[in-house]
Length: 433
Ligand SMILES: NC(=O)C1=CN([C@@H]2O[C@H](COP(=O)(O)OP(=O)(O)OC[C@H]3O[C@@H](n4cnc5c(N)ncnc54)[C@H](OP(=O)(O)O)[C@@H]3O)[C@@H](O)[C@H]2O)C=CC1
Ligand SMILES: N[C@@H](CC=O)C(=O)O
Ligand code: NA
Image (cartoon, rainbow, N blue to C red; front, side, top):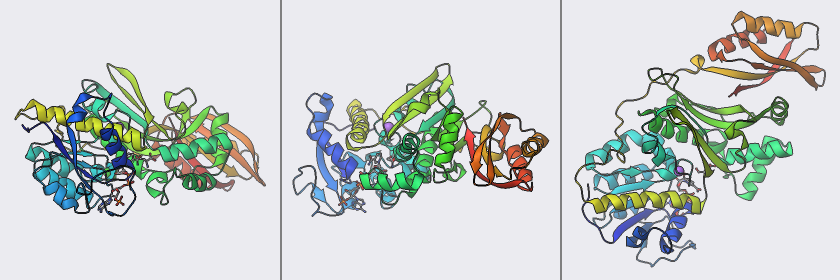
């Protein structure tokens, strides 16, 4: 690994929210770790030189030629905070091939191209650091790679998307509809103009793929991550959930029941018991609960996004790399490098064992509840609670919470229930933690 030091030269790709926050932190180093004073912001790549910037940088530092940064022999560390898939992927690969360490906040690129990125890094004898990619400023990547890595991890459960947590929190506290809160969140700048990646669970899927890979020691194929967003969560379900003692959260879950069983990796809205540690994580905050043996439960909580918080994570990665550059060793540090070669086996959703919440609209006839119970019983689905709570016009509303059940069995029971003449529709199906 690298030998040079004194005046570590950074090439930063991107000067948006995260890039600007990182430059601000680096330009204000008093009272922080003394190693920060050894950093030189050598080049910063942007799309437009004319944009007003929140930081002062000399004109020779700013460039629109990002290739020149990753090819410059003087650059020691490339900090990729431009986002997107391309050209970010190609620039990261080029930087690594050129022997530069890389710090990135780009969960989308890592979740899709992690295999080639880490293979290239290992071949070049350099490191890829990604603390900012999951949970923004919350330290969770390094703890999983280092402090917790002696544990046998059972479960990683996270609220890892601030936008959806903000929307669900407001729906809960105000009794509002998804579309109204989303529009307001966009107006306030909490949700992006194109909210797809956040509200459809894609951002959370990228993040849980990364956490699962670290927690369970293998590569994760992103296509194997079951992903369901929050568009279908209604204020009616939030209200029922509350009555039943739950809050609804978009959870990203990676779980392995035994060391030899396949992983379950998934993102979906979930009824979380009000007493669960993740139930009280509100607004834009993120939290990640890690459960393992022998440690038990550890929860990481904090700001999952924002300029300062994310800059904290990016800069801590830079600091780790400066320490590497200073130690002057040719041997790869196994706690920083990625050693995963194999893909984890992911269990199909039909095999998932979980509780379910289901809301049925039925004709108000005698015996409907009995018929529902019979269909569930036919497939071994045991009911924890069943209540007829109200009416939607002429239709009765029945809410069922099951005990733990194999998802495949539950779906078979539902198929039979849909054929019952008394059943008008099944507006909601949600998993229960
Ligand atoms: N914002 C946040 O709180 C968090 C963000 N992240 C991740 O950090 C990364 C950056 O996010 P963020 O700072 O919000 O993004 P922004 O959109 O605010 O900034 C992107 C920056 O990259 C530059 N850029 C983008 N594409 C190109 C290109 N093709 N050529 C040259 N420059 C380019 C832009 O230049 P210009 O300014 O000239 O337009 C801009 O400076 C993303 O991967 C994101 O997922 C992770 C955690 C939290
Ligand atoms: N869009 C993300 C922020 C960055 O990871 C979120 O809403 O949490
Ligand atoms: Na983090």
